[in-house]
Length: 107
Image (cartoon, rainbow, N blue to C red; front, side, top):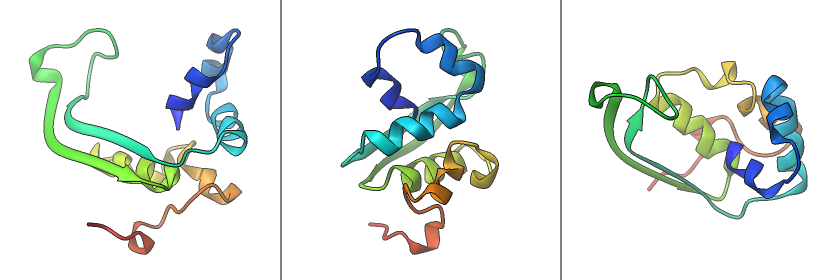
């Protein structure tokens, strides 16, 4: 969901102080038709600007979904996170998408 921050102007730095709620708000106004996650190689430490090759996890995975919450939910699991503990993914409670991956068609 954070990719939509690029759609707004102004002082986006303020949003980082309490990022979950503003990101959910943005996603209720700007709807994504398709969410893409490139998880072929993922920087898992010392990011976003630095990192060593040892900080990269090779997952060879690409996610495409019309449901932004489902995409972020799956992305969280790829990194070993429990989706319900990621504040922005809890946006499913506001009707933005599906957090239960058992209800998502996979191909």
